[in-house]
Image 1: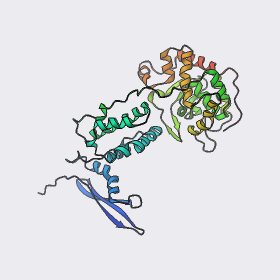
Image 2: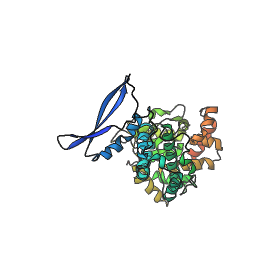
Image 3: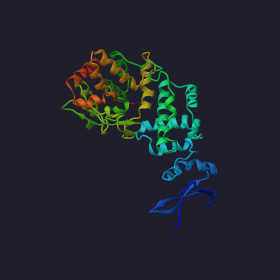
Image 4: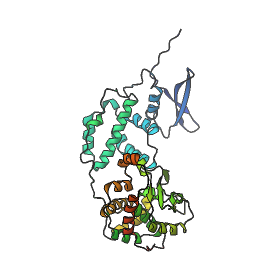
Length: 381
């Protein structure tokens, strides 16, 4: 009886002629019903001009092909291959998070570590690299978190021995919880000055955010069906960012919030002027606006007009927290209204019912911001 031994499969690459130039053929095999079946993939030579470039492209695929063999723990796995597999299998689905991680990978990780073998990367050189980066501590913290995750996955996928300590564990980032710049916070008077200078659409976005403490992605993700007019509530259940509709940032971010009658009146008047399922839809696309362009064109200049630099949509969320504190709202109620992830345990124990305390706290803030009646500008962006 013939005994077949598994070997580390590297595949083969050869040039194949095409009508114009050539392509690369990558040949390998897979197991199907206990039999080896040959497969081929083709790569455009204009995109992958050398065999080395093709090898780099298929490296993570070869690692997956070999993971059930005795050679699964390959000693020559590059960081590029790890990044490719992470991108294909573990990248977060949320659009904004994916975009942020992709930027970190392409701008920071690949250029520095891509060609290196994972097994040869040492804590001291990671530490030295972080020391050299001219980034804010909080940005370094995000970068460190992703790098730590990648080395954990390298161990899970058996590219590194289980007994080896994650090298990123030894790297510490100083002042990671400290902001380089103070958050911009508006007083109620400044808020009214800013929003009344904004075009109507941006005005309504800002007013809604200011009265509910929403993130901009949550405000843009609102549909009219999220509002329960008789009960005076609004449900936060999705986000919209750069054209993508996603889940909210965290599980705790999903919540039912109180809708004050002053804000409800403004929203009813706004609904009469729109014909979309979204509260804040771009007429040209029928989908929610892209916040960066609105912020740069309208919100920043509105802040600068009253001597405030760096005003953005998220400043309204910081301001909402400050207004709650100024109204003497209990810390626990403030955390509930802000919907931070840290309060998920509280929600699990006490439920998500809209308590009278939350409605009363929100009432205090809304009545600071919206003296009745509130005038809306008539122009549109």
